[in-house]
Length: 138
Image 1 (tube, one colour):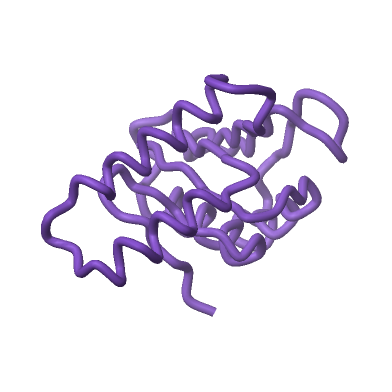
Image 2: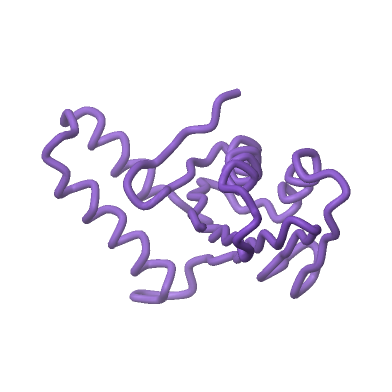
Protein backbone atom coordinates (compact mmCIF):
# COMPACT_ATOMS: atom_id res chain seq x y z
CA UNK A 1 0.00 0.00 0.00
CA UNK A 2 1.36 3.35 -1.00
CA UNK A 3 0.43 6.78 -2.29
CA UNK A 4 2.04 10.20 -2.62
CA UNK A 5 0.87 13.55 -1.33
CA UNK A 6 1.53 16.51 -3.63
CA UNK A 7 1.61 19.78 -1.70
CA UNK A 8 1.93 23.38 -2.91
CA UNK A 9 3.59 24.25 0.43
CA UNK A 10 6.27 22.82 2.67
CA UNK A 11 4.94 22.59 6.22
CA UNK A 12 6.63 19.90 8.29
CA UNK A 13 4.42 20.74 11.28
CA UNK A 14 1.32 19.62 9.35
CA UNK A 15 2.20 16.01 10.18
CA UNK A 16 0.62 16.69 13.58
CA UNK A 17 -2.77 16.48 11.86
CA UNK A 18 -2.16 12.77 11.27
CA UNK A 19 -2.13 12.23 15.04
CA UNK A 20 -5.81 13.18 15.03
CA UNK A 21 -6.70 10.23 12.78
CA UNK A 22 -4.20 7.81 14.36
CA UNK A 23 -4.75 8.30 18.09
CA UNK A 24 -2.50 6.15 20.24
CA UNK A 25 -0.01 5.39 17.46
CA UNK A 26 3.64 5.93 18.39
CA UNK A 27 5.50 8.53 16.36
CA UNK A 28 9.17 8.27 15.36
CA UNK A 29 11.07 10.54 12.96
CA UNK A 30 14.40 10.95 11.23
CA UNK A 31 15.85 14.45 11.21
CA UNK A 32 14.61 17.37 13.25
CA UNK A 33 10.90 17.53 14.10
CA UNK A 34 10.71 20.83 12.19
CA UNK A 35 12.48 19.37 9.15
CA UNK A 36 12.04 15.58 9.24
CA UNK A 37 13.01 13.41 6.31
CA UNK A 38 11.05 10.35 7.36
CA UNK A 39 8.33 9.90 9.95
CA UNK A 40 6.67 6.67 11.07
CA UNK A 41 3.48 6.04 12.98
CA UNK A 42 3.46 2.59 14.63
CA UNK A 43 0.75 0.48 16.24
CA UNK A 44 -0.29 -3.15 16.51
CA UNK A 45 -1.91 -2.72 13.08
CA UNK A 46 1.43 -1.94 11.46
CA UNK A 47 3.45 1.08 10.42
CA UNK A 48 2.67 4.08 8.27
CA UNK A 49 5.79 5.81 7.00
CA UNK A 50 5.83 9.32 5.53
CA UNK A 51 8.93 10.21 3.46
CA UNK A 52 9.64 13.86 2.68
CA UNK A 53 11.02 14.89 -0.70
CA UNK A 54 11.84 18.42 -1.87
CA UNK A 55 13.53 19.90 -4.92
CA UNK A 56 17.33 19.93 -4.70
CA UNK A 57 18.30 20.47 -8.35
CA UNK A 58 17.53 19.62 -11.96
CA UNK A 59 16.71 15.95 -12.55
CA UNK A 60 16.79 15.12 -8.85
CA UNK A 61 14.30 12.48 -7.59
CA UNK A 62 11.69 15.20 -6.90
CA UNK A 63 11.93 16.57 -10.45
CA UNK A 64 11.73 13.09 -11.97
CA UNK A 65 8.53 12.33 -10.06
CA UNK A 66 6.97 15.66 -11.09
CA UNK A 67 7.95 15.02 -14.72
CA UNK A 68 6.56 11.48 -14.62
CA UNK A 69 3.28 12.60 -13.07
CA UNK A 70 2.89 15.41 -15.60
CA UNK A 71 3.56 12.96 -18.41
CA UNK A 72 0.96 10.56 -16.97
CA UNK A 73 -1.77 13.22 -17.08
CA UNK A 74 -0.60 14.66 -20.40
CA UNK A 75 -1.11 11.25 -22.04
CA UNK A 76 -4.58 10.69 -20.59
CA UNK A 77 -7.05 10.86 -23.46
CA UNK A 78 -10.07 10.38 -21.18
CA UNK A 79 -9.70 13.74 -19.40
CA UNK A 80 -11.39 16.93 -20.58
CA UNK A 81 -8.81 19.56 -21.51
CA UNK A 82 -9.82 21.86 -18.63
CA UNK A 83 -9.36 19.05 -16.10
CA UNK A 84 -6.01 18.07 -17.59
CA UNK A 85 -4.82 21.70 -17.46
CA UNK A 86 -5.90 21.97 -13.81
CA UNK A 87 -4.02 18.78 -12.93
CA UNK A 88 -0.89 19.81 -14.83
CA UNK A 89 -0.92 23.26 -13.17
CA UNK A 90 -1.34 21.69 -9.75
CA UNK A 91 1.53 19.25 -10.33
CA UNK A 92 3.77 22.03 -11.69
CA UNK A 93 3.18 24.06 -8.52
CA UNK A 94 4.05 21.20 -6.18
CA UNK A 95 6.71 22.21 -3.64
CA UNK A 96 6.70 19.11 -1.44
CA UNK A 97 6.13 15.41 -2.04
CA UNK A 98 5.32 13.06 0.79
CA UNK A 99 5.43 9.36 0.04
CA UNK A 100 3.09 7.37 2.27
CA UNK A 101 3.79 3.67 2.71
CA UNK A 102 1.87 1.12 4.78
CA UNK A 103 4.26 -1.60 5.86
CA UNK A 104 1.97 -4.29 7.18
CA UNK A 105 -0.42 -6.76 5.62
CA UNK A 106 -2.88 -6.28 8.49
CA UNK A 107 -2.95 -2.49 8.07
CA UNK A 108 -6.07 -1.63 6.10
CA UNK A 109 -5.88 0.62 3.07
CA UNK A 110 -8.62 2.74 4.66
CA UNK A 111 -6.26 3.69 7.50
CA UNK A 112 -3.54 4.69 5.03
CA UNK A 113 -5.92 6.76 2.91
CA UNK A 114 -7.54 8.40 5.92
CA UNK A 115 -4.14 9.53 7.22
CA UNK A 116 -2.91 10.63 3.77
CA UNK A 117 -6.09 12.55 2.99
CA UNK A 118 -6.04 14.31 6.36
CA UNK A 119 -2.45 15.45 5.82
CA UNK A 120 -3.25 16.50 2.25
CA UNK A 121 -6.26 18.48 3.52
CA UNK A 122 -4.03 20.30 5.99
CA UNK A 123 -1.52 21.11 3.23
CA UNK A 124 -4.09 22.07 0.57
CA UNK A 125 -2.60 19.16 -1.34
CA UNK A 126 -3.83 16.14 -3.24
CA UNK A 127 -3.16 12.42 -2.96
CA UNK A 128 -1.85 10.58 -6.01
CA UNK A 129 -2.86 6.93 -5.93
CA UNK A 130 -1.04 5.96 -9.11
CA UNK A 131 -3.89 6.91 -11.43
CA UNK A 132 -5.67 9.99 -10.05
CA UNK A 133 -4.95 13.05 -7.93
CA UNK A 134 -7.57 12.87 -5.20
CA UNK A 135 -8.60 16.08 -3.43
CA UNK A 136 -9.48 15.64 0.24
CA UNK A 137 -12.94 16.68 1.30
CA UNK A 138 -13.11 19.53 3.81
